[in-house]
Length: 396
Ligand SMILES: Cc1cc2nc3c(=O)[nH]c(=O)nc-3n(C[C@H](O)[C@H](O)[C@H](O)COP(=O)(O)OP(=O)(O)OC[C@H]3O[C@@H](n4cnc5c(N)ncnc54)[C@H](O)[C@@H]3O)c2cc1C
Image (cartoon, rainbow, N blue to C red; front, side):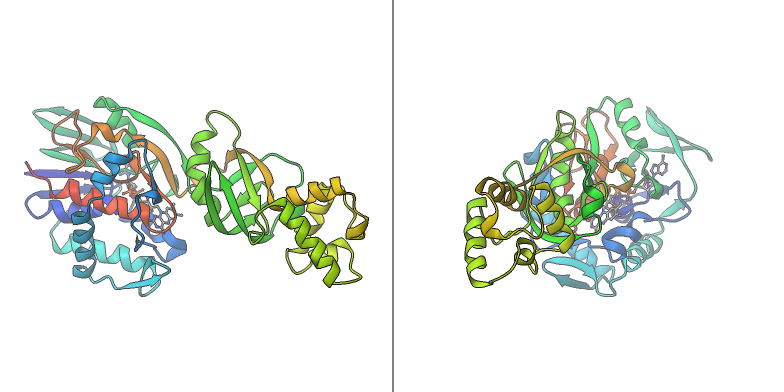
């Protein structure tokens, strides 16, 4: 049995480990190194798993098939593999990192394991075509390779500098697969407005709401819009909705206050207790001064105005801007700055136990090329690992 794995990223490496048990395995990798993307994951620390395994941390057009893919036995197997290849976890709020805090630990552990298992690697080898005629013929810049089984682990369009340029979608389409339009995910969001230079550089602890989904955490206000983990976690949904219209992201800059009217009551109380302060001084200590200045300006209120002198209508505008700020999203910062991709090969066309194509026997797909994406927290690597395991172990 000869197996070719196209792409030596996270999912391809795991596929190679399992396929090598009963097959002669070659990885065809366009880069000079394996697992290039792993090195930049988790800000160079590689967040590779999470103790919160709720399926709501993932998105797919077919969540039931996704649940079948992410079955308990596979999760146990992957965690056993982590032990076998020497990964020791440092767990922070459920997020798993290598104890060394270095992504290179994960990359090296996977590479050592494929070396131990005798996996052959062809570096700087770019696959340009795959066809099937009794066996697979894989064309590359370094000649043709033949195999009984091909695992396509080429990633998506996200972060193309690491090698994933969307080539795998062409293979999938050639074999008759449906591609749900890939859009950038875990990505910064560009917004409409001419005030961004006023808030650029500010970090604020906020509650973000989009379509009844809420994320609480630190947001980074930028000269194009917003960034930060809680923005990323809503970006998959927003990125998809951007295809239809401009989504409105709601920001509560004071998450301990739940409504605009509560804010006005809070300020009335504060004004009685903290005496002889103007409105900007009353807001001092609650928010960054740049943000206070901007929100007052957008509400038509002078910094020096006394709270008691401000009209009720202006107080209401300020309360809305603080508790219910409507940010119109016009775009993402694109695939090159995205950590992953939402959309991909329709899971209905894949066997969830084996990751084999239902269109072509012997052809398998793993990782980000499939229509599944996770929030920040190790979920995208988990999906890459489990799909790699399932595709690799299958040999019939
Ligand atoms: C900045 C950043 C931070 C991230 N942080 C995290 C994190 O902390 N936790 C987490 O869970 N996820 C994280 N991710 C997402 C995670 O890294 C990916 O989801 C995962 O690596 C996808 O694995 P993959 O095997 O599908 O694809 P990739 O890792 O992209 O690997 C694809 C491989 O295929 C090769 N290839 C492509 N086309 C060809 C071709 N034609 N011929 C030969 N080879 C080819 C590429 O060179 C590449 O090596 C992050 C991503 C980025 C960009």
